[in-house]
Length: 94
Image 1 (cartoon, rainbow, N blue to C red):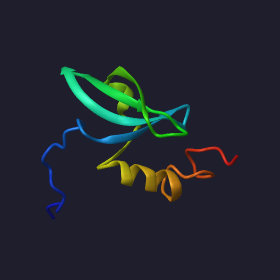
Image 2: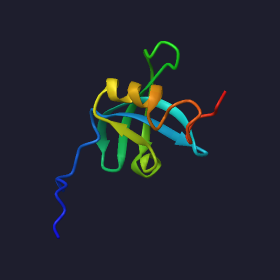
Image 3: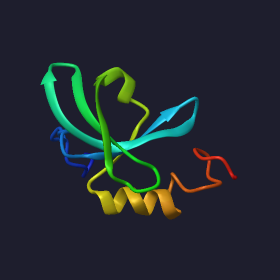
Image 4: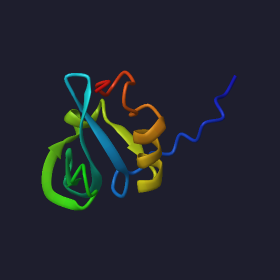
């Protein structure tokens, strides 16, 4: 049986994300560019204000475990009550 999922590659540029480190949410941000094959420019957001803070270059291999979202609202929903919620498997209960 053929899968009904669209198999067209989805670009990462423009996606929002939560990164993981040691199995826990580490960064929140958005992917801004792809300057070289295998490298992505990401902008990290402040945790309290959500304002852009700093940009970093990241290898695609580091991004394999990240959670990606279509927009900031979807990322916020995940943080508030989805997979990235407090007390869930990827955030401390405190």
